[in-house]
Length: 413
Ligand code: HEM
Image 1 (tube, helix red, strand yellow):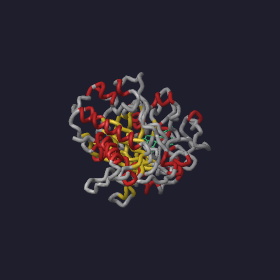
Image 2 (cartoon, helix red, strand yellow):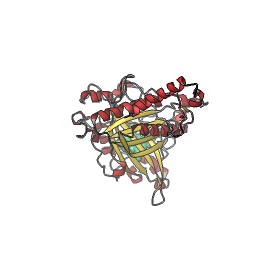
Image 3 (cartoon, rainbow, N blue to C red):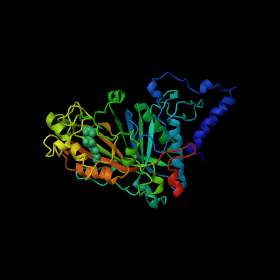
Image 4 (cartoon, rainbow, N blue to C red):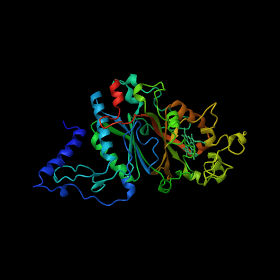
């Protein structure tokens, strides 16, 4: 049987055969013309490294997060899934002239939605595993990351099972939506014998902010990401985000990270009728500048030591609850990488919009779960309703051409 990876090889063979048989077909008829594209489309993010791209990578403009159930029946098939995924990611993150098949009795090789040329467009595909994958199906029970659990409901949640769970998560990010959709369709086409989509949410960030390298503004109109720990501080990232040899995790987890994904609906009609003062108090920051209340600049310290009774920045504000900046007692050990979503109109004629909250941490409990517990009951809850998502473990990176996603896991089985 032809596997998707052999499909990739066979495409090369097709090209070779066509070149050899150029008396019959000329290559220019087969390989579509390269077109001129804006230079930002050419930007490539390396998919190889100790860690996967897309975790501490600067946000691209668009995301599609898709959660899938695995339909592979054996460990060998599961392994093949990850080899195929790795092959597709390697292919999709390069510039490539796309093949056009001359045989109109065969389906086209690819969707055709990019015309004749594929550009990397800062594409990253981040692959993660849900807790379910470590059930008895593949004998992976003993290798489950220590903190990986099914997502339980928090008090303000209204979880819809149709928007929760999944064996595998794919976070596909790129600068243009067409690059995200192209990659998604390509991956699903090549892996359809091993996975079936369960839920998917598309998201975006303001182009203006990504182009200007300013903190992206969310749908509430607040800068979102200011308090994030800087990604260029490698020690800090090892401390907050990446599993290292020092952590008591199965050996294969080193270089990976826990991913918490939450789908959070906003009540924007209500929010837009809320006085500015209340909006700012709910977050603890000024709306336009992003500065902590009472301060001038976005990155000014909130100076909680000068506000011990919470008169300036309320104890109930989102930022003070999330990160009380009290290292002796608790601190938010996570890195956020969220996107806005827009889905249409609900049954009551209200906008269905909100946030795909995504955060990464080396310890799910100390990161997302403890932070969310501190946020439980915050005034912002009047405007938000989490309805889906899941927890995953992001596989360590692909370190060389002969490596594939999950290889360390399969070596340990
Ligand atoms: C309704 C969804 C949410 C919205 C609209 C939102 C928005 C914001 C905004 C505007 C800030 C202040 C600016 C910044 O530091 O980025 C912030 C900070 C923060 N948020 Fe959220 N957030 C949401 C959910 C969450 C969740 C679910 C968590 C984790 C459980 C979280 C954790 C944090 C942390 C750790 C900070 C940094 C606080 C600081 O450093 O002072 N947020 N959020």
